Length: 133
Image 1 (cartoon, rainbow, N blue to C red):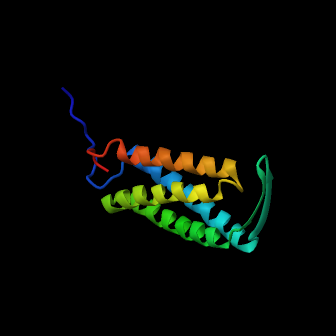
Image 2: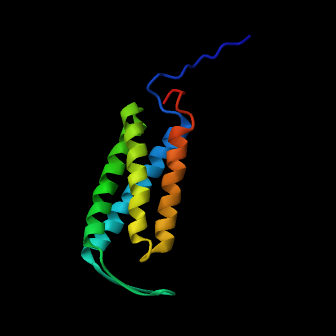
Image 3: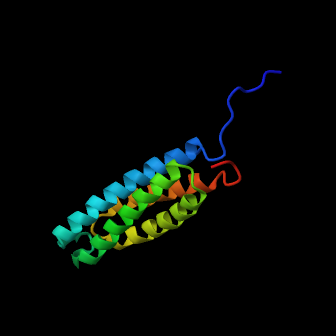
């Protein structure tokens, strides 16, 4: 029987964790710029099937921008294989998904896509918890 000539280091992340890190980097970057746009242009009027929503989005913009920065930093922790980054990523992605509900009336497609991506990355980080990061 042939033996494997390469072994995985204990700190080397697997493919799903790399996928999660890349997606977190992308979500964090988009959150940063979307939050910045909400801060710069904080008066939004949305007309939909249920009337008009006038919202001051400055607070949401700051929260989204800071959360985006944290997501990018934790994504780098996932790239290096940190178990603490994995736990922090699950927490931050959960907060990110809940935080997107705030903007849902103003940008439903954006909020739905970000929530969906957050849930997919949470699943990928939790699905093989017993394996090497």
